[in-house]
Amino acid sequence: MPELPEVETVTTALNFAIKNLIVKRVDIKCKSLRLPVSKQLITVLSGSKVINVTRRAKYGIINFDNDYSVIFHLGMSGSIIIEKNVFSNIEKHDHIIFYFLNFQNKNKREKIRFIYRDPRRFGLFLIYKTYSSKFKKYFKNIGPEPLNSNFPIMLFVKNIKRKNTSIKTALLNQNIIAGLGNIYVCESLFLSGIRPTSLCKKLSYRKIEFLYFNIVKVLKKAINEGGTSLKDYKNITGEIGYFQNFLYVYNRKGKECLNNGCNKYIKRIIQNGRSSFYCQNCQK
DNA sequence: CGTACGACCTGCCCGC
DNA sequence: TGCGGGCAGGTCGTAC
Image (cartoon, rainbow, N blue to C red; front, side, top):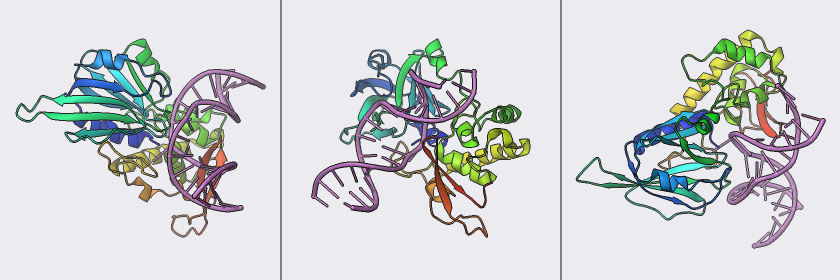
């Protein structure tokens, strides 16, 4: 489900919703996601305070004031739900629950509930000491953030050019560039006029630079629209995103290409077991 | 070393 | 209505 724009939408909102809150209680409803869920969440975090929530690639990081951090990943079907004062029923796939108390307003004490929900359980919810070796291991090999102003474009071009794969495969590789998934790779390649099957080494420097600028364009637009909601993606207050209304190729098999003057239809092919969408006419 | 592929899960949608 | 197949926004271990 969630790629960089969706995770960014979630972490930005969380940074408002739970910043400075103190953990009152933690419930663990399932032993294991993609990796085991540690009981340390209960023993270590109760009574500690959220400093902030950040993002790296598709990972969210919740930093606490006792020098511990939660690293979470939403996998394919993960979501986070924040409720204030009025709590709904816990559902089947609600795996981890945090109860917070907001002491900032002395007159009105707010009760806040944080739920990690994940039907397919491909996600992660880990606790490590901040900047410990286990914490750092998760980010050691991840490539640069596309939206950072100091993104190393020349290094990106160089790393793409020495890959022995299709450009689609290279862009999904988190070690080359962080945060892209199937949707935003397909969309960036469409804007750049590059076929997903094109070989990395055959792309010119100019073309790869152009691709980078289109990646930035797509990601920024998607963040502004609150992410892409195809099936079940929702932000932390249950609202959908709107970038699906701006997709050129993803999930548009058999539909007309949206480029002016192009009357071809969008193709779907399988690469490495995953769908790629492109226009035969506009992407060479 | 780099690359390809199956495994990990549940749920939904479609055609028969 | 029911069942089987195919599909899904990701990542990782294994085999070559």
